[in-house]
Image 1 (spheres, rainbow, N blue to C red):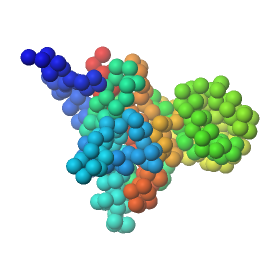
Image 2 (image 1 turned 90 degrees about the vertical axis):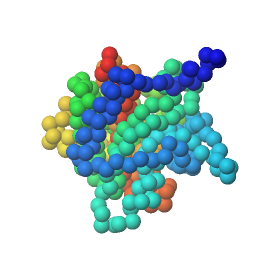
Image 3 (image 1 turned 135 degrees about the horizontal axis):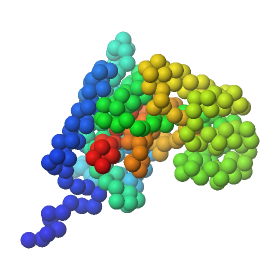
Length: 327
């Protein structure tokens, strides 16, 4: 017998017994919060047409997708991210009724990332999340953050923080500096890596204003609501100031729920997913190497599928949360 046959490929694994039971219970606890806020479950295919996740959508790079072909020669991919799939479904099934009001959908399932840069991490992971479509208000942003905090508490976590930013803050500074698309991409990558020295040099080289540059880089780490308010008063461009004012409104709504202690701000927070247009966040806890939940506002994504509608959502990295809880 070829013993290779009983082993899984690199990046995937079997789950069974007590671990599988704990995983299902964790998902149920998170889903209980979604139910509390009136979210309905949707199930999307594990693979989609390549264009659902194309570069124009701003999701996972093509080189990191598991790609294959059907009998007609169409390129298909295993989903790397739920949000474009849910956006496609929303356009296809739910958005014809203009009087229906905001659409609330939630999901769970596995996603796949075909990369050799995961350094021992899994290529197949489980996610559960929620999308609020058709509401562009600060109240919608706040509802997502409140659900994230409540769901992490329901999961059994006490010590965590939801680090929140606003992509409009970054884009406003880039516009004020007159940066072209290529320079913006370089700057995004540098700030995402927390390489502020190189980011400052790039901004200075391309005419970035000293005051706005300083605010962007100085506030690239965790800051408080008072830091955010102080930064807003010093800004030299309206788009960035408006972005921070909206974050203030979101904070006030979270504060009304008594959950503000879990919220912090990172004005240098960016995402590898380019479809985000407004508020975005990542939740962290001690002992986890990366974010255990994340999400944000993506008001332009549904247009790719033929219907313009604002949207905001969140996703929980189930395997990472479970790893933390079982340590």
